[in-house]
Image: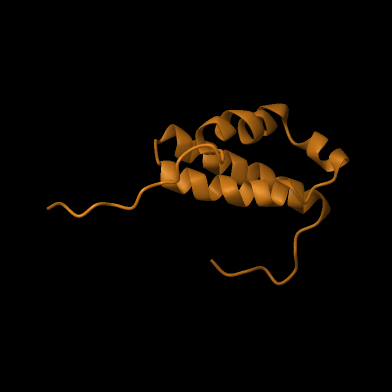
Amino acid sequence: MAKQENPLTGEALIKEVCRRIRVARSYWDAHNNAACRGERERALALYDTLTKEQKEQIPQVLRVWLRYRSEKYFGTHRSPPKSKRKSE
């Protein structure tokens, strides 16, 4: 995916964070963990750039999923994803 020339700000940034969290949740519901992990990382990177006031504009359901529920499964305490093994 190509990088954006102008970084998002304000309302557009909030909408993009919400969109990415929703996409990650849809991957999660589809049991596509690798895609979910990547999308969650992107959403979290954008979420960390928000101010406190902007974070409060994101629906609580999305914030909870991003910060707590998904942390349980994708946090640093978990083992990293394994590469696909060759069958011997």
